[in-house]
Length: 373
Image (tube, rainbow, N blue to C red; front, top):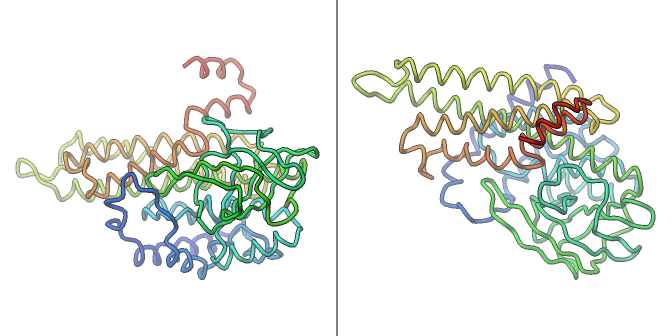
């Protein structure tokens, strides 16, 4: 993908979000699970963003995760709260591998913004990678429990990973179907849902079966980690920009805060972290976009670990430099920190990502030290 296309994507995202997204719309909702803003979701569908990673055969733009990551970096900077990664990118990774008629139908609905999809694969807390599932598909119904499901709409469709006699399967299940119960828990920019399935009947036969299903799940997770890394890097940069703007205007002892050397040094440290984070996710995105097995790349874990650490450190430092007002919900800097906390832990916290990186890299001695920390 050319730099020119990336630049066009970035510019269009910045222009659109500058006009459409306002931080005050995210205040006053701590502890409240938030669903998609359907008007905004339809608007980004018109821009083509929902189908960026889908092939043209599935109504998409035929790009890849590197293009989606460029968008996500802007989403982070602008505090865009719509569940793009969970609600568009991850389902795209699954649907792109299926040739079932329902897959093409769902892909078209996803791209148009009138089908609200999400992926349900995790079943345990702290589960970073999974090869087996307790959720069972018996050939007609599906039974089990899924956790940490983001972007779940009341009239949406969930792509569920389950075990069967033929190995892993992925089925499309309407949230409104009989036998589906769920509870949402609030996050900084949305929600996670706990789903209980009791003999629920999917919309159609499985989308994917066996090794292909396993590969699609892990590809979806790898794509999501890269995109989340980009979003975390954007969150950190947004934090930095807001903080440098604040300290250059706020005065104490007849001097701006930026004139104090200790403040300048902390801002410089934040900038170094942001630039490192930016470089790592861009490298991972470029590698994953051309890899036949992106889930096997250690750079994915490195990107998620680095960007998570940087976003959290930058957010905390930014709150401190804003003083007492930084702790208030009305101050936008706190929104950045809460977003960093959400995305840094989603799909693997930095410590978990470092352990997976060491395991994938074959560095057993360092892995044992990391596990003992």
